Amino acid sequence: MAQATERRLETTASASFPEVIELNVGGQIYVTRHATLLSVPNSLFWSMFQEHSPSQLTRDSKGRYFIDRDGFLFRYILDYLRDKNLALPDYFKERASLQKEAEFFQLPDLARRLRPPQVSKENSIGDEAFHSDPEEAAGSCALAGASAGGATGPRSPSLEVARKAGYITIGYRGSYTIGRDIQNDAKFRRVARITVCGKTSLAKEVFGDTLNESRDPDRPPERYTSRYYLKYNFLEQAFDRLAELGFHMVACSSTGTCAYASNDPSEDKIWTSYTEYVFCRE
Image (cartoon, rainbow, N blue to C red; front, top):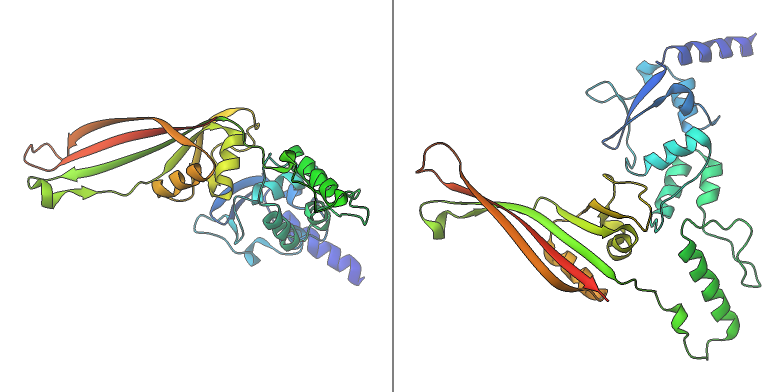
């Protein structure tokens, strides 16, 4: 009798949710089906959307269900809920963070797949090893072979990080206002966003976790993109990183426009510029 009552209560709570659910995860908006969130029994989603009613869950100002977690990594969590597969982009450097997210959402199978590969006593990669990057797997095997060969021998050039040749273009847009007294009235606006253009694999190699891929996710590593940007706003920081990895500037171009802040010609002029720096590594 008690079990039947409990099942009836759960069915009532589940039925009160709409078929399409809107989620706000750390400020990122996702839309999915209610059935997708219930696809893994005993997960955190199962508890939220099966054992609770909508009135018991936290919502944002627009009525979307709010989850205070990493909004960018949640896309991989949602992909797993849809088809139970794990597909990560090449050069994915946030595996450990994604594993924590999987553990938080109580998805043990996903968390297991994200754990670091197991190495046996014979320095071979275990059966449960999982690499999102074939080059990463090759590097692990090479390091294991070097360990077996002894530490006294010369270091093989194949163990050095392979640096691909290519071009990376850094771009930024800025503006400044010049008043009648140029020396005293100049007002500069900080760089709002630094864009990165070039081959996907090369951009990820250079900028790693500081590269924001949210506008162009899952692009193949050998394709080109102009939609990446950096998570910081200091050009010098980007230049230092490129210099450390053997890049040098080969070209620079800039365009600018001028307009008045209002229809009154006596008002301050607003200058807007766009600048691109081209870096090359041979």
